[in-house]
Each structure stands twice: as C-alpha cells, then as structure tokens.
Length: 335
Ligand code: KG4
Ligand code: ZN
Image 1 (cartoon, rainbow, N blue to C red):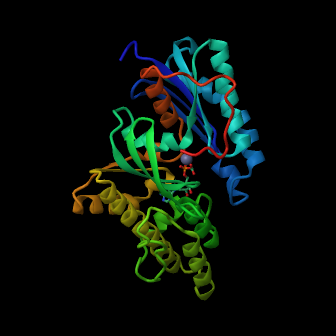
Image 2: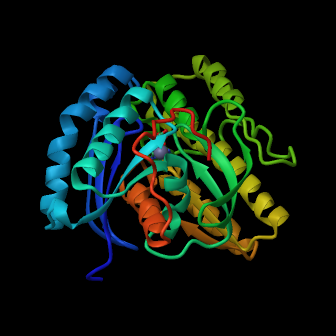
Image 3: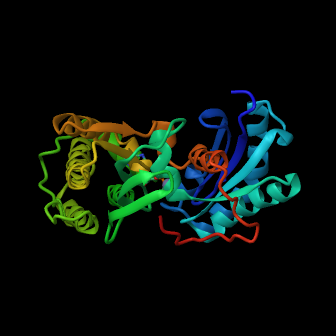
C-alpha cells in the first residue's frame, strides 16, 4: 500500500544481527539476518563479548543492504524500532543505540520493543491481533500468555528453570551435536524411535501453566553413559524420545490453558516452534479439541527484526506515543 508508513527495525538481543523494513501493516520490504552461529559453534554456545563485537561489525552493512533490497532511502522511513529486552545487555545495546541514533538524525519517532511481544504477535504478522492463548517457546523463554488484544497480555505461567530451547541445546551438547541443538535434534529425531527411552514429562499434570525442563535434561544426562553414542540409530532414538517428552508437555499444557481461559484460538511462536514434530502435534491436538491454530511462519520463529517492526508498526498506526530517547535497554524485561 503506497503511503502506508515504513518502519525500520533492528534486533540484536542475542547472537543474531537482524534488520527489517516493513511497510505497515504487513508488507515486508526487506528482512536481513546475519547469523553468528558458525562463530559461536566453536565455543558450544553464545559468548556475549564476541556477540556484541560482531553486532557492531555487522549492523551498518546490514542496514545498507536492507535499504538496497527494499529500494527505499532513509527518508522514506516513518519510524525506527529496536529490541529493548529481554536479552544480553551488551548485545541489546548495539541495536538499540543504532536505532535511537537514526531516529535522532532523521527526526522520526523511536519505539523500544519487547522481544517477547515480537515473538507473541508473530503468528498474526500482517493482520489484526486476535484474542487467544499463546505459547512462546524459545531458547530463553517458555511461557503461556492470554492475549486480550494488542498490548493487553496476561501471563498464565512460565518455566521454573530451563526454557524448552535451552533443554534442546543442552541435550544436543551432551550428544556432542553442533550448536544450536534444536534443529539438529529435530532432524535426527525423524529417524528415531520416540518410545525407546522413557523420559519424564515434568509438571504435565500440575494443573497450572508452569513448566520445568531441567529434570528432563538431567534424565538424559544419566541415560547417556549407558549408551553407545557412536551408533547413529541410538542418537536418533535419544533425540526422538527427548523431543517427544518436550512436545507432550507443551501441547498438553497449552490445550489445558486454552480450555481454562475459554479461548478458541491457540498460537505458538519462538525458535522452538520451528520444530517439525511440535508443529505436527499441535495441528493434531488442536483439530482433535476443536481449536483453531495459528503458527508463526518458520522464518518468523527464530529471532528476526520483522516481528519487531510489526509490533512497532501497530503502535505507529494506532497513534501511540513513541518511546522517549532517554529509554534504556532492559535485559530482564518481562512481558
Ligand atoms: O527465538 P530464538 O531464535 O531465540 C530466543 O529468543 O531464545 O530461539 C532459539 C532457540 C534455540 O534454543 C534453538 O535450539 C531452538 O530455538 N530451535 C529449535 C528448532 N529451531 C530452533 N528447537 C527445536 N527444533 C527446531 N527445529
Ligand atoms: Zn527470541
């Protein structure tokens, strides 16, 4: 739509440098992600100082590339946005400062965006936000939220220890698979027998929306010394058994929460929602329970700037007050 405002958003909450240009409400003009996975793979996880330094190196060329791809100049940008938190302080600071600097230079409004709201609304990308029960499953977070409208969220429950993605990454490390572990386990599990190793489904019947995944990780750790990890089939069976345990809990608790809240729509977002088994099981369970399901597009599941731009575009369109330029990053920001 010509005339609709263009938002430039930057996301640097962890190890992904991402820039997006979005013409409201949902025309993605450019979406660039520079992944540091290769770099952090050497250390088996994200090293904050390394991530921060690389955001600094990657960001300017990435913004220039996004503008070229979108075929717009900076003068076309009506608003700037950046992730304020939660995330790694030294990473957040890079994208946040850059977006604020651009906003000052261009004399355009700046929006400080909550990363979790970015994930939360990504299943609605380009369309209106609807009331639902939403599961966010990423490397840093596992939570159930009731969405009452744009900006109106009620936290139902969250993990008491590890996030689901963190459990995937830690179990992959135990299996000596590359970082990040989620996609590796997903791929290997396809050839595995999910019933071979009985693993705990922690808190599946707790009657609330809280999660716990550290016991499952520990159960895998105790199981591994008894196995020959040189055998590809054994590794595939561990991956499938572990993945099924995680998915069982996520599906059961989300369906129970939707029922308790009386909501007819379920959404799932965040990096772990890329998982092929999780997507399949949610489709089956929602159909069996008469619920509608909205999954984030795979490209919008893992960290990206398009989801940040989408939240900011909504604020701009509703005429909401921009963030003050004195706004600071907030590494522990809650939803
Ligand atoms: O949303 P995200 O990019 O970053 C955070 O905000 O944390 O999520 C990253 C997490 C990692 O733990 C990664 O292993 C997991 O998402 N992940 C997956 C898959 N793809 C990414 N987990 C399971 N299956 C996948 N296919
Ligand atoms: Zn994320």
